[in-house]
Image (cartoon, rainbow over all chains, first blue to last red; front, top):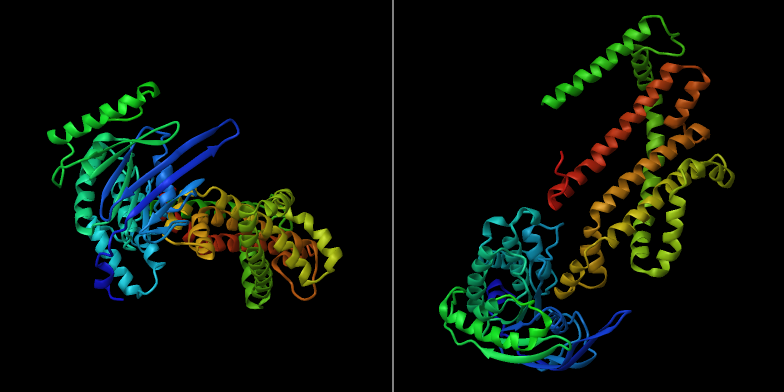
Length: 270
Length: 256
């Protein structure tokens, strides 16, 4: 396999969530984190899952990733049932989860080295391509602790993209960054999505962020975790988080959200 | 550079006052050898090969025992961290036995193995093994679980996860444990060599012991210095580079 072949987009994947339920049981009580949730995500679609904490959106992401098992229901990736993590579905976590014993290059190479059919030199070239894509070509040999929060998430993004997955699962990846860095990354993620055309499922509790990034915004409510509403955002890309049109969408979503979380306190930020 | 000057001056002063004290005639030279007599002994024993032989014998015992301790200690530590069964058995045993100063193994070793190399080896292994098990176990247990989740999503499983994620993630603890294990092994071996004469080889501890028997204080002090020197050298050669690497990578150790 050549580098060009490796860098060519593998087709994005269709994800189908069918009737998923999941209960977490602690000593005190049991919580129905997901109650018969179904969802279809088309190839190359950018879908944002929004909701207050405890609404099961991260749990759903973990189940799609294959990191957790549902009590009932199933996840289909291009029609095939998902039971464990796979190279077709890469995850980006809220904490960057980079390995401190490897440098930037080593981190991006980690998943690539587990991918068969490539020579080491080719792997390195692929890693360089993705580090360039996230704007970190000058930091190949930096240590993780030397990077800023935003740079760490960029490396994590490059690491997730490097094995050329068909789906990218992002679990509040920008939640711990400052507003300015976040805005930059909104631009970057849209640019990269345009370039690489992955199916992206993006979990967030920030309504505006969801409206800015998603083709569709799916609203969750807690206790039990259910899908309550769905919005299509028909704005041209690249979208600016501060634009007036976007504000209209996000306030519409916010109103809907408040409608069913008024009694739960406000854990969702606009 | 400045620090180099400070240490040079300090140790020169120490040496000069030592020489001065021994020349003052206040203390009997039998009890208080002069630095020059110590150096003279060192030179003589290097020339006739005694010191090299003793160092070689001691280092061989130490390195072999230490290696055995690591080879068993690291996998056992991984097992105790991973499986509850091992934690409740080997882990508990390690925790208890580790509190035992390793010198305490010497009488047992003598009874079991007699005055043989095996007895020496046994003491060194006992000094190393338990602290390495505990350090490995602690290292694995303090690893953030997110590393495992991230590795799983990238397709890492089984042995690959152990070798490429769990082991390197616990390196800072592991190196700490290996260093402690080394210190314990070194101390226990010296104690064992001072206690026990073994005909297959005279180690540094035995030279120290015979220095006392012969009332050759210059020999006693000289061997003590050699022992300190080897300890420092081991730290510089084996552990310092690792620790520097870890600090650089992890971004720890702000105080240089």
